[in-house]
Image 1: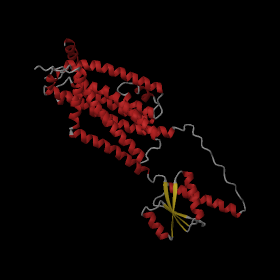
Image 2 (image 1 turned 90 degrees about the vertical axis):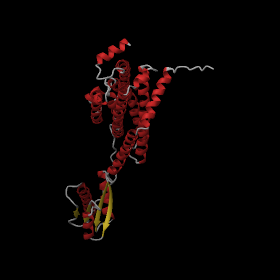
Image 3 (image 1 turned 180 degrees about the vertical axis):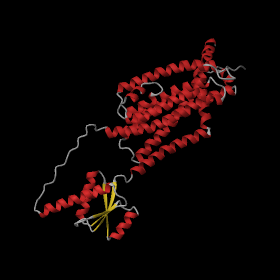
Image 4 (image 1 turned 45 degrees about the horizontal axis):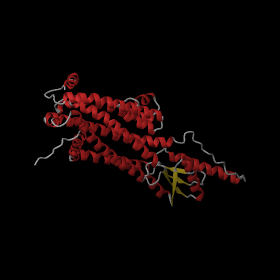
Length: 397
């Protein structure tokens, strides 16, 4: 009885390598710990933002010997200064002084209706002085006018017209994009190194010789890049879901639609950035046979990532600046810079299209050239392979 054993198709071979990479990394404790740390950092930033914002727009002022008019004046002055005033009444000065020293209130107003009212604060020069001074002056003017028999009409309300009504939304989106870029940068570095380390491990253990007996080098490279890329994308999506859900739950952002759009933009740029850097890291790693030599060949690509990350931070402050505009079109830098410019409203739609096209062209070029380097250097062990030798060896195969 004969059995018909059919060889695997190229797609099946790529899928097998991809599955092997995914299963290997999922069982890696370092990968799992790193993923948990990233998620905890995102949640930590959200909690920190909530703590910073809580109480930032509230001023607590104690009053001794006040009336309803004093409370109304303080709250009205607080509204004018953009802060919510909480008035706490105290029976005597001693209790009020203790409250100021203990930090229970920002200040205490003594005798607000008298000739010489006093404000007790822990230290001078605070915004509480400005608020209380304005309220006391307003009450004094109103009292003098009332004693003179002058009846004033309510002042007109000023309608505020913002020349850039989307400025606050752009700022929020830019902050979200910057947080996303931090995660994107971390994952590009992490998974780029995974690809490079895997290549060197296979070369040093001679496993690659067994693998290449059943498949071509490009199939091995494609499976490795696709497998780790899918794992990285899944991790990026998990972090994105946790971040979006946390931001909405903690009420950190006001525009959920804009938030989700920004996060999806960062995820899309991760796909492009990973395809670029994974090919570069894999081709560079194939030039060496020892983990000790790996740093010397992947340093240029790592530095390019660092430069892009630094420029992306600057782009958050000046999305239309010359540096951020030019670098957002440079392949390798655009995955980190362009999403920040998009979120901040500093990039036109055609600029995004041009940056994506340039990135796709660069990816196609890197995959082609990097594949040749990978193919020519993969079976050459014993030391560092020169780039020219790798290209020449590939042409001879």
